[in-house]
Amino acid sequence: MNQPTVFLGMPDHMGIYRSIQANLEHHGFNVIHLVADSHTFRYPSLAARLQTKFRQLVLRDKQAKQKLQAAVFYQNLLSTLDAAGGVDYALFIRGDLYTPEMLADIRRRTRGIMANYQWDGMNRYPDIWQTVANFDRFYVFDPADLQSGSNFLPLTNFYFDHPAPPAGEAQTDFYFIGSHLPERSSVIAEFGNQALAHGWTLDFNIICAAKEAQACRTRYPNNIKISTQTADYAENLQHTARAKVLVDFKTPVHNGLSFRAFEALGYRKKLITTNAEAAKYDFYHPNNIFIWDGTTFNGIDDFLKRPYHEISTEIRQKYSFGNWIRYVLDIPPYQPVTLPEA
Image (cartoon, rainbow, N blue to C red; front, side, top):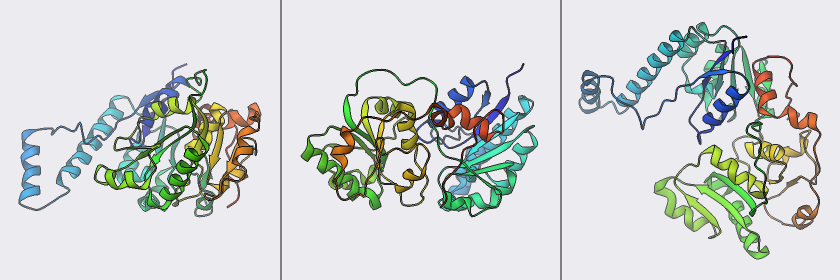
């Protein structure tokens, strides 16, 4: 039996597309994926370069190069799909990065289901609303978003079931990586200060824009690292494996669970999170997940002493990438993924 081919359309965020592509291939898919990378862009011709410079300098079009990059990417994408004879499935993560016209062209080259997963919440990138009708199946991960569209389907993030988590002793007490957001910086800083007071070891990494790096450094204690470079997702998983406990600080723009919750489930790690919604999911157990109010540390010492509670194989399997992709593309057998009520 021939392997089905899937087109993967998603942003190059922390290189997570490489892990998704590897897991799609592990689960029997051929993958077509093109990344619109401004760092490696080359002008298709001297004429295109000169025309772009003319638009920038004479017509004052500040977006001239970006428009050319988008047009070149679009043509390369369609040429690649045509050369492959179309695809069996199309999987998008953040379909707002594509125009409705581009999505329509990809849909005509897709024999089976074309699905989108909006993992950042519907209102964070509002351009997504104009593309909803382009998809056969449209998934959201924030329970509040599920009420916004009659055709929306529930979905969560997942953990990668390939490769298996490496064995070995934990080397640090707590691990976190995330972008600097002013709304949560004081909570993260307080955790760092408490770690110093308790003698806990941290592997905390805050990603800041280069122009904000100095200001970021003043917001956090010295046991929290500041970086201007985005870490690769596969490297993040190595840090995950080396930690005793994962820590998650909720972003204020949505209530969906971050990847950290599912990494904890897949790697059998304890989790401390400021997202109270975690208690509503079927994999929640008070021995494994501590809902922190961001202020008081009462109860954390007791939580750390309690043994990890093994979650049933059925529930763990539901949130694996293998089940996730079969559910998203409606390829039985699979367990449907649900969301708690908002």
